Image (tube, rainbow, N blue to C red):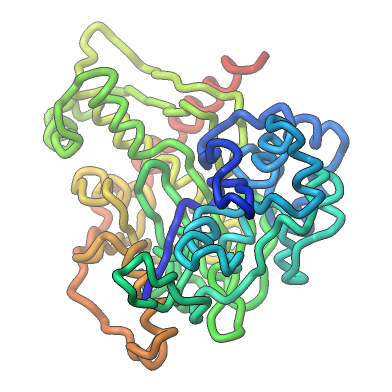
Length: 423
């Protein structure tokens, strides 16, 4: 069977008669719909959207991307209202193509990221669609994350019809791949951004500290929910040092460089290249470096950039702790940047909790495999999933007082960067 995991908010609109996209896909990181979002906020719609979708009005999510596309193609609105156009996140587009245009679906996890899906009533919300003037006939059918949706068209795989059996957004897939099946389990994926999800069980937990409420999984008719904090810039900050600043030819070299930095350089980097995500939701903030001296080195800036990932993670986990009332005892990690041992040890120190890194860090792909395998009977149920190989554990060695002092300076740096970026 085929399991699909995808960038969640990245949006495609296509013509169902020609099977071709009518506009370039708009990626999750794009801020080009900021104007639409500002207009919605000015009209006072944010509390309504948040009460139904668990999300904030932000260019990150799919709905305003659809509105943008319809406004920029000839007769876009008319074609959409006539049922000629379909929209979807990348999973929907892939299933449409693989099935030969027979199935237009998505799963609960991806639907919950569109800003159009009512996660409490588990249906597309007519009122929200009306506000954005998005015809509901464009929207895919919402299904479980693990079931056989369709078979591939014979011409794709040499005449074979392969079951398409699992779909989940990348971060929910990683949560499943990390086997965060119990309420309170939390993981962080260190990729282009950082994405922290906490399983909150079968009851949605509303956040009052800047997080979003989302769907963790739809499995065998049961919906589980999650609290999520999205950090927009994480691993991409390391790529910036490599590609634009030319500090090193390989990202893996950042660990060695950080170890050679001054122990207490006092340098802080706020990598707000595309604004700040949770818990700040400040899309106008831009990056800044603080604490520079004549003695600041390339190594110091590399170290500060790595540490910014850990600081942003603490921002989100502190918000989760405030919302749930219980401190995090262990953080499960995955994604490319989690192979950096300096970062993982600093993360453990800063959070004052254990960090667990699996031997197989590509848990996003593993989650998609689990979901598909469960649907086709390769595994009987989640209890049948293998425990996997041993994890690498990191434990705090820094005193809590020192960690709090370092974090308080980070908070000052964020405050200063936000102040500088205000119009």
